[in-house]
Image (cartoon, rainbow, N blue to C red; front, side, top):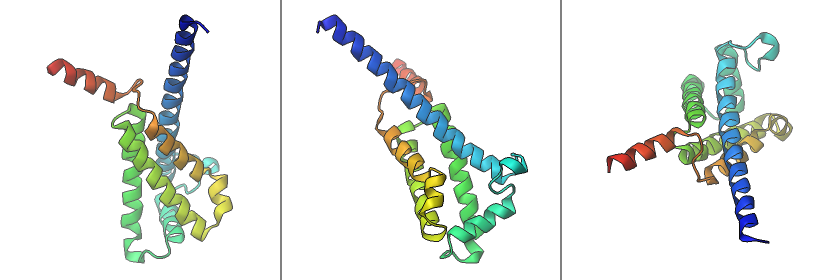
Length: 160
């Protein structure tokens, strides 16, 4: 193979990684925000898992039976805030590596809570382990592509 051919392959592979990274960021981030929209009743009843906050609280309590009832609302609110923050950060590409790792941890905790209460089949059907693994994989893709981090890094270099 010629050096020119190797360079073409390298550039093509580099672009594939960028596209994969963008797809992971957008799909995981949108997944978080879609789940939040569901618990606030923004999806139709046909498309909802919970449909409203009260049903989400009941589900939170069901998959976390070890949490005292007095803390269920706080746990649900913290999880919801985390999903909003992580979802937005992933979509805009802010602190992507850290956000992806935190997303992987949150999804893994959710998957484990579901597994111990409703069973592993529901976890697999909802692709929670896959989403967690995808988040951890995203954290390994270091090159920036269409991310707020790129702009911040560029601005920081210009200031120096």
